[in-house]
Image (cartoon, rainbow, N blue to C red; front, side):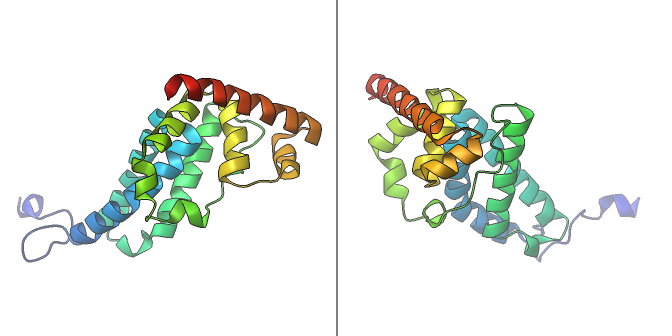
Length: 181
């Protein structure tokens, strides 16, 4: 009976599980980064789910006493993997599952003004409304900064086909953006 009353996790002198403050600090620092990374690649709804999954996995590691494994780099790697898993599972992007790469720009937290801006919100809403193929091409080109040759290789098409597909994606973006803004 005494064993049932013992806490599941080691606790500090206040009775809080060890690492709660560390987890809250990491969560506060990395939530915008993980959320931005996931939503730019999956759209708002799926991005929110992936963000939740990433921090749930982090919380489980903290609770199991392995808090030292949860770092900002670990969170980005888990986010990247969950985005790719989502693409594979939903068969959205069967040809391009390895394209996501972290960029310094994605990891900066000082771009809070950009996220808060109305234009940024309109861009994110527009991307969310685009078909997955168009969104993926635009993200590869303008977020991940792939050249046309890299984009063609990753999408499994010729450069001229990639250029045409990118033009169609830009046209679709402009059309939706005009409606949104």
